Image 1 (cartoon, helix red, strand yellow):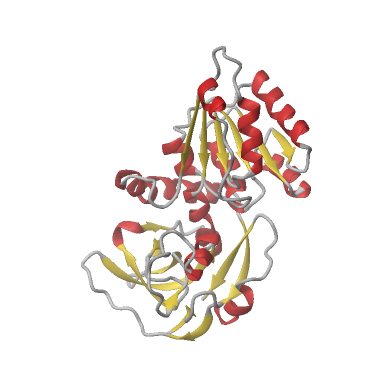
Image 2 (image 1 turned 30 degrees about the horizontal axis):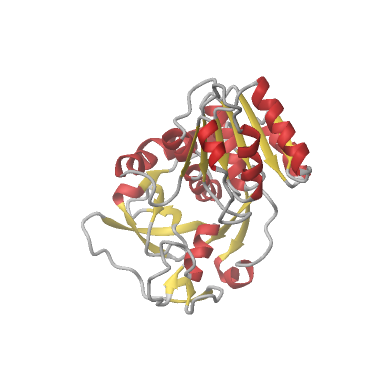
Length: 323
C-alpha cells in the first residue's frame, strides 16, 4: 500500500510503499483511510522530540495519530491509532473509534477531534467548567484555540476573553464567540493592566493556555493577590509554543487562590479517555453538523506529503491529507 513514511528521524515523510497492516488483537479492525490531519503532535512524534517518543529507537514509521475512513461494512468512522494513519489502510482500536454523521464531510471530521482533545478535555476534566464561568483563552488564534472558544460557548461560558498576536484572527474570534480580545503585542504593563481590569470586573474562573512562556508569567502576575481573599482561578496549560518554561514567584501561589495543571497525553484517566470517544467527540461532530462548531482546513493529496509537511499553513487552519 502507499503511505506517508518517515525513514529517518528529522526527515520529512515520503510518499512510499509500505507493508499493509494486519489485525493482530481482538480489539483491532482495519480502516480504509480517506483523510488524516497533520498536527504539531504528529510532527513532534515523527521527529522523535515528543515526550512519548523520546526514548524509542526509530524505525521506518507511518505518520499520523488519527484519521477518518470506512470500515469493511461501510461504516464511516473517525479513529485513533498508534501505528500511523496517513496511509491507504490503517489499524484502529475498536474502543478508540467514533461513528461520523453522514452529513459531516471527511475533512472536517479529520480536523476536529485533535482540537477537541486540546480544548474540551481541558475544560471538562481539568478545569471542570460550569455554566456561567468566565474563560480566558491564551493563544486563541491557532486552530485549537479557535475551537476552545467555541467549545467554551457550548459548555455555557458567560464570558470568553481571547489573546493572540494575529490581529485579523483575533477579530475573527469575536464572530466565533469571544466577547473580548487582547493583543499579545501590547507592552507588558498594558497587557497586565487589561487582564487585571477584566479580572476585577468579571473574575476569571479558567485560563486555557496554548502558548505558555512570557504571556503566562504576565497573566499570573496580573492575578497576584494582595493578602486579602482572592477569586479561585484554574489555569490549564495545553501547549508551549512560546517556550517550555516560565519563572513563577512563590508569592503568587501563596497569595492567590490559583490551581495550575496540564492537559495532554498521559494526563487523562482511562475513564476520561473513554468518554472522549463515547461522548465528547460525538457531541462535537453533531455540533459541527448543526453549525455550532466551525473548523477551517487546507487539503493536500498524500502524494504531495513531503512538500506539504513543512509548508506554512494559514493561522487557524488544519492541514488535512486526502488519501
